[in-house]
Image (cartoon, rainbow, N blue to C red; front, side, top):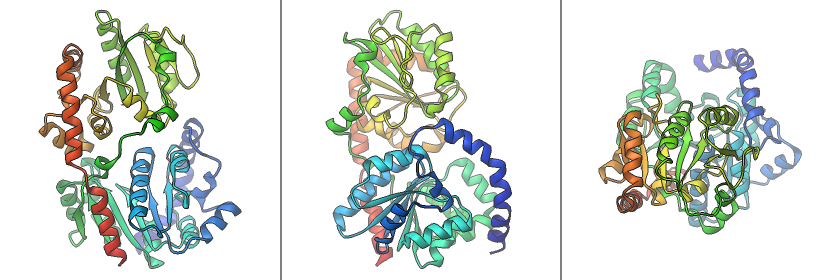
Length: 431
């Protein structure tokens, strides 16, 4: 109670200090922005009317694109099991909002999640009137959670994980976070380690290991890939090629992969590189890096470059990563090299049967990496200096490359089932 009072007292000052960065990110990042006022609890008349027609819906909250994809799949599956249920889906980022709007099933209301200030959350909660609030992964917001509980809603944290840094921070301030976590009806953790970490913060918390719902994501259909077609023929021409994909890259990784590619293409003229940065707003910075390396590239967001004659595609756009994965031959997952060791989700390329290379640490996806390395289904590269050799090994051994991809697909299939387990937990809580 005291913490929430201080939190809400300080929120306006902290928000004003944070506002310039928020506005800059808002301006640079693509996605849906027309309804951004919903982050402040302000809704259009049409949206208020849409929400008022819902009767005690389940409110599902995801942050950005990755969580939104999983949330959409969970809602679809839940509706198959309980056709009469109503849903509200919220996101934090504009890119997540765009994806939610484009893919949400009919009857699922899509909104922005309000900033966690009591006036904003209260206004939104009273408009939505949820019977249950289902929050994905690591979004622990005091006002949103307490406000939902105050209105009589159940609150669950699902597909939950806790990174090394988060665990240290939450443990240090457990006197703050433990009371917030106690307001949750349950936590559905991705792994035993995640469950242990939540229990370490709040010993009397109801935590269940339900698995990682990202393993349950269906592969894209032909129509999905057609709608998000990378158009590689337009960029590289129609001659036979092999595509090396640098996926969800972070600063430093584009230069590393660009240098490796420049060396490899000398003896492999059919090799092409596609770079998909984690944050599309870094496009100009990456284009400068590729130019300094002397690489012929096309920048997808602007069309800059020479179509049909390029050797590199800079895909500084959002929502197309899965299509580029499907069109690639080898995937190097970002946030794993050039000083980064947190890792990114390697499940999507593995599910599509692609050979995947990632750093051997992947602190934020440790359990996923362990599941795939245990099945010899991913190449965990011990440092930047070994990356070139690992890529060469796959490029020059097509049979080994194909076998790795098949093992990756089989390993993902073995881990499926978390979505139904999570829905079971939610329905048990509601009943």
